[in-house]
Length: 370
Length: 41
Image 1 (cartoon, rainbow over the protein chains, first blue to last red):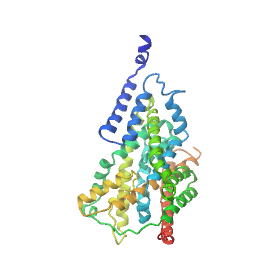
Image 2 (cartoon, rainbow over the protein chains, first blue to last red):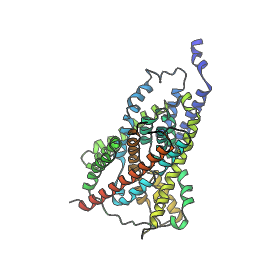
Image 3 (spheres, rainbow over the protein chains, first blue to last red):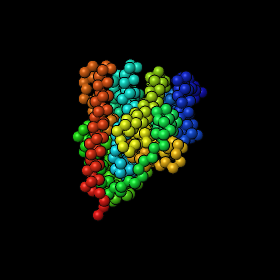
Image 4 (cartoon, rainbow over the protein chains, first blue to last red):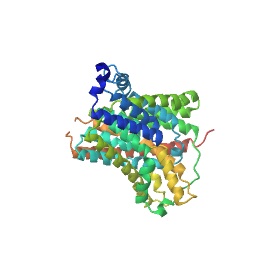
């Protein structure tokens, strides 16, 4: 009997709260369809990790082994990038390269959030890791957080994926607060030129080379994304492209989620820092959206043919949800308005922007003797 | 270098600047690619 009750005796209030948090994440994944592929494994991982004397974690625990193999080494985020690269069609961006600037402007949340985190007492490395939630890109957040603030990986990942799933709720009020109905009704050019296959093939190779020369530490991130895209676009590796988009993406996502959940042990997770990180994550997404919209409005001061400023908000890299949100608002204001292609272009640019910003931050912070 | 607010501001400013420069270079790159490889033969 004592053996049976052994674990129960060690159960703390913190463990119980973590069970509830794990249960909440599973509920949100199943009932609300909020990033189910990530939140469900994270929630279950949190439950596994908080069972007293759990054999899932610890020296020989399978989750610890997965953590050491896939997160500590940064292997899982890198593999996810190959899968994402294979999924992304850069066509809309190649048709409208101008959208790249929205992809840069919508990283504004990263910088504002990092400064806020530093003001709240976090170290520079922690602040950068928290700020990168504003990349609106889970693997980049995991990659940077693991490098600079491994102990904050759990809350940062939960914040990143939760707010990505809440983009349809976060972006519309920010956009509406910063734009007039007339601005939201602006139509955009629908006559986009075709992009040659040669351009599609050369693009990932050249971006990798350029990004690598600007920030060598971004090569892993940019290179894996672009490798996946090259597999997609080359036209002779259809099986590999499909494998990357399906089997690789699914398998690594499954392992990534449950492994991250295993870092959410009560004594590390139930802290004021976690609450602050969750709050700052929302702040990051709001400022990402605001940065994109305000940058578009600024450009409109000089452009003859105005840009619908909502497209700037799609520069956040929550792909493709953000583009859909923008199109929905545009059609609500003007049923004949079709800005989806531009918004997708900005959205894809946001993916490039977030990885570039992450790589640059890694390079800058790593090169400082702190 | 000291870990303080000024350092953080400086890092963030550099990062924002380099991200924009990087995007400008990629923009130019796309323009060149589209110009020299306009369509498939």
